Image (cartoon, rainbow, N blue to C red):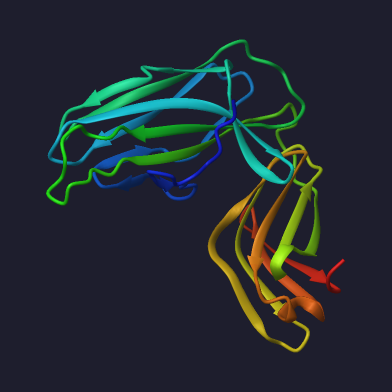
Length: 240
């Protein structure tokens, strides 16, 4: 069974930067976990800032990129303790994440902790109670602590005129991409995403739809991208 990140019946919050994540009463800290290869456990703080008690479920999934998209699979390699909690108003709960059967690996391994605020049985004044989902990235360091990503970029035409940006990372650690902008040869600037764009995981490929206006990209130009906090200038001759 595969769990794909989606928004169906949930307000899906995939938060990867900053000190903590909070919305509608549920606060989660930290929002990224970096775990050493020999480290046996880590954890999250869940805080209920609302005026009502809250039921929360915590699950851990292996995070892969297959067919150039994100896939989450159930994993026996992490156990959340406790996996289900009831948090009173104004209180907080620590959830420990314990590694089971630590596997040595050269490359970095990626997981996601999915934190769900479970729907309340009672209705709100508007007749609907929203549940929240947080998807927290977890990275277990590979054997090479100073590893860096190695990226290859490709601009593609998609179905229906979509413009696709594909990134292949042949390095042993992830590339965190943000602040993506395209500048055409005639100087026209197109902001693709001001904040977090996404991750290219270690030894994986990821593709994103970035526009429906292929004409802007046809003559080539360059992308200005921030990768792991460093500014990159990636030239493109045009579509392949």
